Length: 61
Image 1 (tube, rainbow, N blue to C red):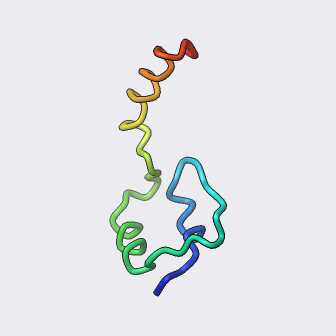
Image 2 (cartoon, rainbow, N blue to C red):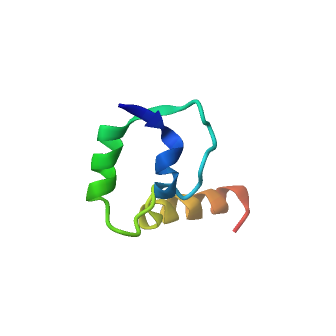
């Protein structure tokens, strides 16, 4: 069944409000089931080096 994507916004560091975006709930329920309890997408451990590099390149850090 397709449901509003906003139902899964708690999984993401930044949320996007697009009410017309529909996602397949069986897929996202499976993703949600297997993620660690306080996990967010992107994972901060994964994205931290990318953000650090970005800050260096842009002079923001």
